[in-house]
Amino acid sequence: MNDKTQKIFFYTTFGCHLCEKVEAMLAEVSHQYKEQFHYQIVPFDIIDDEKIFERYRYSIPVLKKENDEDELGWPFNYEQLCHWLQLS
Image (tube, rainbow, N blue to C red; front, side):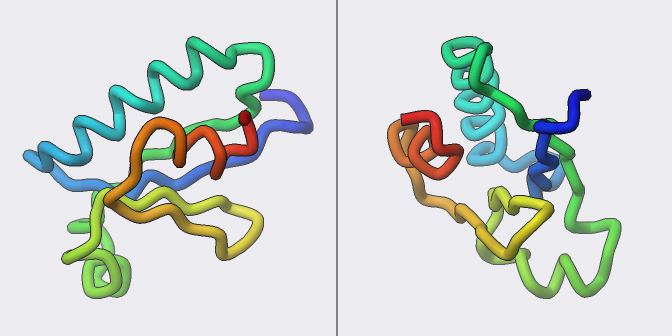
């Protein structure tokens, strides 16, 4: 991980089919934009933290940048994900 790499928390839980769609989108984005993709995706199961569970239980999947409060919550498409990641 270099100094330009930013963590993105991926709020998810076991058996979430929408979360699986987002995982696939993230894999595609990281492959398509591999030279520009300076992110470390950190999956976080919302069931592991009561406060996070209360906040996101009805809105997962959610992506949240570590260094600010910028979030991207479902629903979103591939183009919106790329824009949020500042890749397009």
